[in-house]
Image: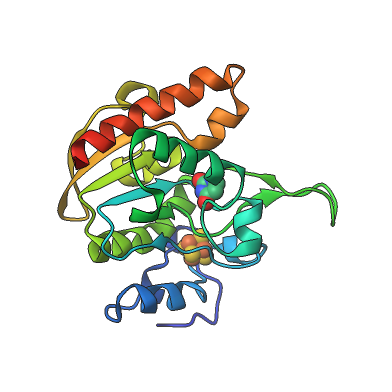
Length: 218
Ligand code: URA
Ligand code: SF4
């Protein structure tokens, strides 16, 4: 690790100097707790690292922790996570056999006044890129058979800025990511289901995409 004394220029945002090269997921999680790779650590409560089995066959990648995740320190424990677990079970994937993480590990939000509700704010490409070394390290250690890409931010972080979830959702993609051949099934973000005008239809769409993932794993 190389603690910085002076503020890094904006385009130098990166988690890289904080990522240990040995020690497995435990060492990664511990080191991520002290990441200062971009400014998002300043206002968030804590780093929310990935969670789940180190030998999971499927890795689910979301955007960033939400309010509940930021407080509890675990990914997908709030409303979106509950919906995701239900959809996974309905699609025939045991949520307990997945590894769940996010493209960005700190909660980004706006808050009109102290003690008012914290409103989720989408991470910038620069923040996603800064946080990328953590996701790359998780992928290298878990070596999932399949990555389920939850929404646009995860898609852009893994597949580049031209990613469009509507164009590829529910399909199996094969791409090289960080030097490894990966299989991916993109779908919508579970939060978008909660915001949808037709929640039931949006939920069924998510389940249908997850069934594609379940077939790959079968
Ligand atoms: N949304 C995400 O993308 N990730 C979480 O962990 C929770 C909500
Ligand atoms: Fe580090 Fe990622 Fe948090 Fe930025 S968002 S400080 S890169 S863990």
